[in-house]
Length: 66
Image (cartoon, rainbow, N blue to C red; front, side, top):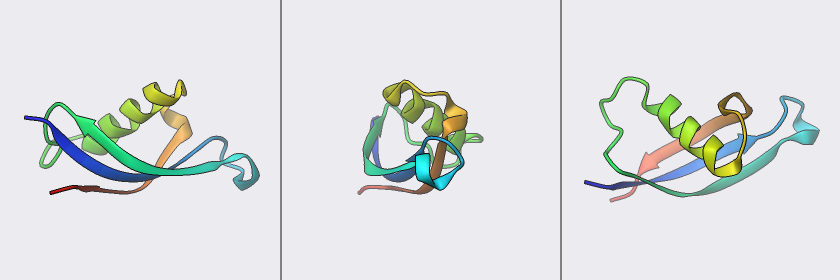
């Protein structure tokens, strides 16, 4: 059962002048609630979409859409 999440995150270097802030809706195959490593999994999915290393993604906020 797919689930949609609103996410707000920063990509890029730790230095603020090279970082970019993004927000949007991400759809995953299964709900992330209650799963160990859910934020890591979401970060890896975002990194893959942006062709970045997951270490370059910092999630500021994420919440399931109902």
